[in-house]
Image (cartoon, rainbow, N blue to C red):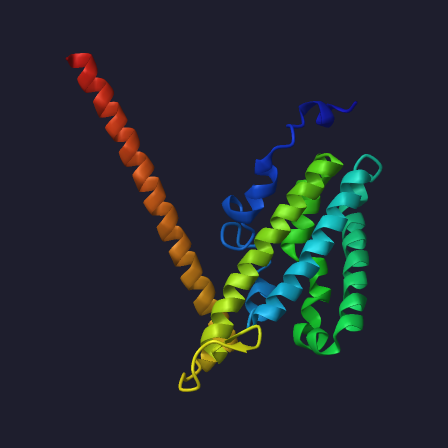
Length: 226
């Protein structure tokens, strides 16, 4: 048993849920923003990119973790890139076979998954240091968190930019679409708005915790003096 295995923490639910919210790749760690801003002009594109990223992330992390004791340190990054590129190529062919129209909409951003900071970063920082099961569970959580962020952006942009969701008309025909939302600037606007809202919620939660902690301390002090 290696020293890394001895020190490894047990598998918990937090390993899975961390990537969905507390360590969300987009809203917290700000990783993989290139596809986030480029392909989220519709929910369908967002879902396709998210599912493709989940597949590559889970498969590459699983293989890196399984081979972590056999990959020489000197060539680990090169090996990780080759592993990731293999699964990206597989995803590329699968999407072409399923829908050429969707493939054309996603463009080169499918191939660019190879250099996505989220994918390579998880392989180097997590999968290479943890067990197979933990690496797969963590990768799945991170992938779902990434997909959630994509859909949150794509939903707002498609709704305001076309008045639709997944091709279904939501607003009346009198609605004037905000064309800017399906253009590149719309990605920055919506991402900034979500970040502002999330930071506001987190600050409110932190403020309530501090207030509750202060109140409990005051109650303890008053009891000690009485």
